[in-house]
Length: 430
Image (tube, rainbow, N blue to C red):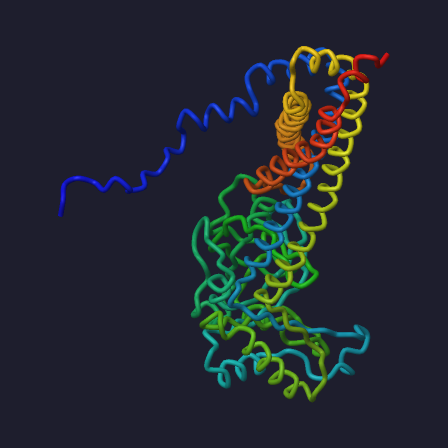
């Protein structure tokens, strides 16, 4: 191979060569930028009023999308805490005064049937919930007594803070032991260590063997579930030691954990058929499938964010129209100035670029101020309300990009009008 390169070989032009930089400054030179800035500085109030639409438009986009994203994350987090591999079967009694007319209600046999029939099931956890007054020494509080099996804590991903969980032997031997939710422990014991102490639930004493870590609130269907105010006891202890109305359901709910998430939806359909047949084809129960709730919530929040973004985008459009209107008024007001500049040798391109640069500066500066105000408003919402907010990078880039585009788009028409003015007529303008 020859060491000499062929004379006709194409050598690519450098990205930032002198000729390209020269063409750039010919388009927007330092002098034109300086003249545009001076024009804005000479009319501070008008410039500020022109930016207001962009400022509030950008701030609205950022804050509204931040509120929407915060709500989305909170809702999805609440659903995920129920366990995406879990299926919850709950009683539905339409006539509380005559529950027997609702047919057979949830029982331990229902849970055993699901466990035996469905191979995809990892575990089935029965749950009883009752409201009781509980006291320790002179402190009284109402709690939700939850009778369940030890597997409940694993299925619901509940972590222990002090002590431990009750065990399967505790359940088999009807032991009077309990695990306290974080809020229940705080209300009964304040700063005292609860471990080994006895609390009275209704008229029965239970020994505290553990305290759970704080659990964020979750959502089951349309109901918020705060497990921090619950006291957990072995299910057989609850069934044996507390009186139960024979007309009431044996269980309040059954939690079914599926081995693989891809089988959750099909398993839910199968479980529904099993319970439906066992309850004499009476639909006195409901299934809560957190995975389905998650997908539905994601779709709802996506639509919600699009609507909020569109509403905020309209304010950016209004801001762009404001820029165009005030720039048109500015062109009319500075007609004589344009005529003098043309008489001094300025070209149509110089005049167009001067007004276009002014529109770009106003939109960029308004976008930056709008971002700062949007961050401030979002921070204030988080501090002074219970709303969660989350500012995403894409919302900032979107709002700033749209504000810049709007400024250039609506600033071009007034700049074009200014460039097309007849110099002689402009000099005659009073």
